[in-house]
Image 1 (spheres, one colour):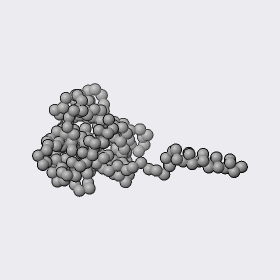
Image 2 (cartoon, one colour; image 1 turned 120 degrees about the vertical axis):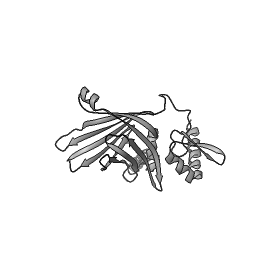
Image 3 (cartoon, one colour; image 1 turned 180 degrees about the vertical axis):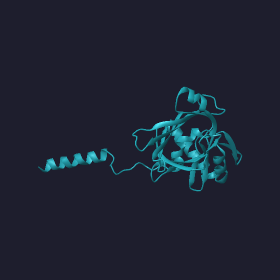
Image 4 (cartoon, helix red, strand yellow; image 1 turned 45 degrees about the vertical axis):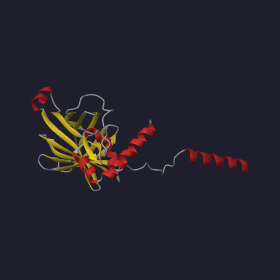
Length: 241
């Protein structure tokens, strides 16, 4: 009998050791770590928007806009900022990561100067963000699809309270300006964000690269900090090969 009890105890120990405990939560990402998933957005984009409707409506009501994305660092407030030139609906947008919720938040300013706050999650390369409009009594959704490093699409959808499914109102397809449709593996890495480095910066006679003016300003404020992190990323990548 004792032998059976001992064997049963050992089986339990093996099971517990062999599998992670349910209480073990995944390590929380910092805002900068989570937002690196959107490094490809940094830069200027040419967007073409069209409403949902007939072919004639799409051809008659389409519009073009320019979208510029960059990193912003304001103390602990780290986010991505988008500025829309000739945007039909939005003028600016700020994308943040909320570690306590493990969700993304996008604050968009409309042409009518209304602030819209969306929250949601990233599934691979699809960011889905939602909000409830109490006045219109409908759910509103923004979906951002990262198709390629120089191509993405965002769409706006609504779901009235009496309906069960969202319907698309419009979508915008954007292509990065001045970037050929080819790989960028041999291009320099941004010393701050880890994205594609496009702007050179100097420190102690050595050249580094940043991806936008936001990262440039952050690097110039704390060069030693970002160089240390940059060297650690390079070392980790070389070990992984």
